[in-house]
Image (cartoon, rainbow, N blue to C red; front, side):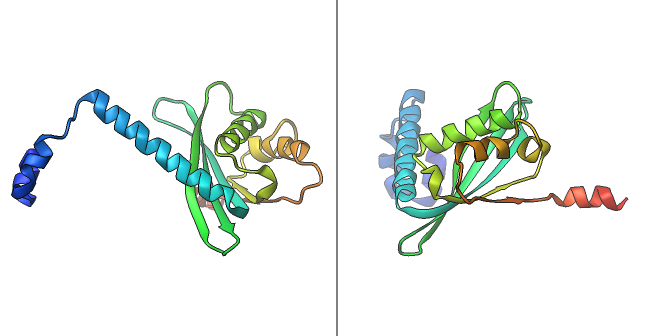
Length: 164
């Protein structure tokens, strides 16, 4: 870091030398940044009149299923915000009910009113839109009487497989 400082701003090298870079210091600073970013996102979400969620379940390099939620919302001034809302690990199975549980917990953590959601986008996998114990079924049971548009994003590779 100090070598970069020598090249870019040698007059500020003393300032860089006084910065503590111990593991504990770096960890606490990252945690402080995390809390601040979550607070900013919660504040924006609190102002949403309507929002939509895009979600995908995929497996990481350690063979652990991960659920990723993106949120896009609009406030009363029609300002649009789009952010990565959360990433949740699916420790056991990837059934629709498991995905729905993590979906709910992710939204509760960020204080997203489920009644403000007007659109959910998924990949259309059977655990999302199947007949029994799927995500959509769990969602409808939780929000009865609420109009919710459920769009399915199909991956390009699915079309390529069908063409051959």
